Length: 154
Image (cartoon, rainbow, N blue to C red; front, side, top):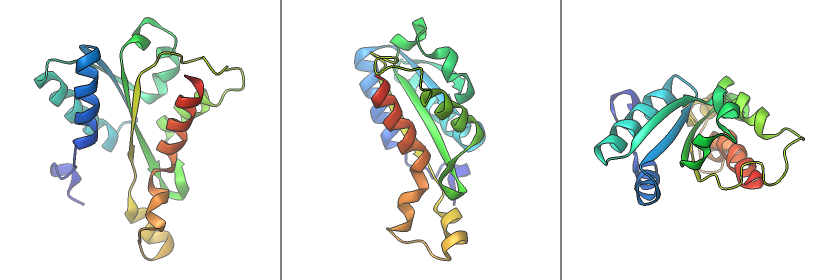
């Protein structure tokens, strides 16, 4: 894939940015390093061009963010799924926090968020020796789980 050279379609993050601009002039962007950090930097640049201030965070720090004053600003979480439908280490830390049994249904009440799943169908090709529309759904399982838990907690 040509993603390192700018071959990524950024339509979804731009929509999130435009929505956040209507409500706020600040956006919190959470990434897990590597490829998701590269996408986060592109989101930050686009946001700044549109007058939105961005604070970058590692997903490992999502727990410290939740419940604090920064939670009043919209959040964009870039979640990477690696092979076997598993999240990358930083995404896994965020997911472990979200799954805590001590959280009630209002733990993240009021948090405006968007989740962008970054999966790689090439990993499926190794496992399945082919990629089709049915197998590709597994590429964003980690993002789907994070999205579901964020909805449940807020």
